[in-house]
Amino acid sequence: IYKVISGAVRTSKIMRDGRRQIGRFYLPGEFFGLELGKQHNLSAEAVADSKIFLFKRRQIEAMAQRNMEAAREMWLMTADHLRHAEDHLLLLGRKTALERLAAFLIEMDMSHGNCGLFELPMSRRDIADYLGLTLETVSRGFSELQKKQALELDGARHVVLRNRAFLGAMGA
Amino acid sequence: IYKVISGAVRTSKIMRDGRRQIGRFYLPGEFFGLELGKQHNLSAEAVADSKIFLFKRRQIEAMAQRNMEAAREMWLMTADHLRHAEDHLLLLGRKTALERLAAFLIEMDMSHGNCGLFELPMSRRDIADYLGLTLETVSRGFSELQKKQALELDGARHVVLRNRAFLGAMGA
DNA sequence: CGCCGGATTGATCAGTTTCAAGGCATGTGG
DNA sequence: CCACATGCCTTGAAACTGATCAATCCGGCG
Image 1 (tube, rainbow over the protein chains, first blue to last red):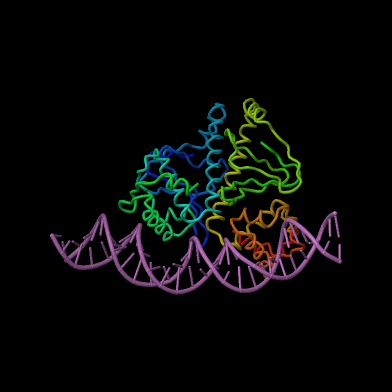
Image 2 (spheres, protein in one colour):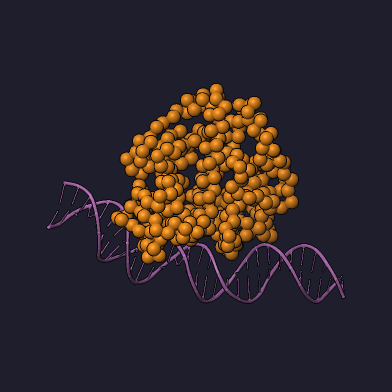
């Protein structure tokens, strides 16, 4: 089990022919890799220079054994990850490209305190593989949302949200 | 928390305009609804006449409190649901229509003991909403897999797998 | 026998992907 | 300090997969 201290991490699955699906991005403060099985179900890579704290499985299991609260905390965190995954199923199965992008921007904004201003640590390709799109479609989406006055880009990575309500309604 | 005794259950999310994503089908013996939060994240409906066993939250929590093994079991089951959801993310984000259908058939076959012969309890629309497709595409997929000698249909719901290896390779 | 809901099949359409070209920022070496 | 290579991003045009619209089929049931 890992905790992101700084930077950002992506977890993903890759098919033999190279198609990739990113399960989730983890930002500072978040935990990942709670699978509890013999093997992790996704692989994880740093998206940028990152500092990661590692908890040994034995530590965790021991703590869960002694401490009811800790065990409950583990379950809670796993349930939260499940909820995120289930929300993402709806996004991947049923939303349009623009809706996916809007939902992504709102998600990023939330994890930055809803201030409507943040830096994307990941590339267009990473975003595409998270949203089940191609990097070109993601790029076109950014352009379109700018044209719609929903956001501004300062360089490719620095985002300023101009119409949070619109994005929220679209991404919902 | 619920356990399917007989029949089948689907859990799903619906958008205001009617688009629906089914998270998973639950067959006899399987548990669902372990979210642990104040509210379930998906709604659940029976796909066919079903018998469901209900565990009250208080029961569960009490059991987890007393019994370390039970608490661990809950976590384990949640982690397993998470793994299923993560696998499904790859399917929805990156696989073609035929690959999705193949993966679905293999999944159904597995939960029927890999005997290559089973009854689908759900409609084409349910399958479509599970796989992020339209019911027409699902129907065409079935026809195509029959043309490829990968399976036989006896009526719309009764499936006989003729080439499990092929389907497995395609769905992987 | 005829109705009805679900399933199949056909024709066309649209959104996204693919293929391709060009832009922009950064860094390196002359 | 400039020329040029590199990586990432944007934009455009064409192609394709799956969606939509529509007709027909099939099986069960009154």
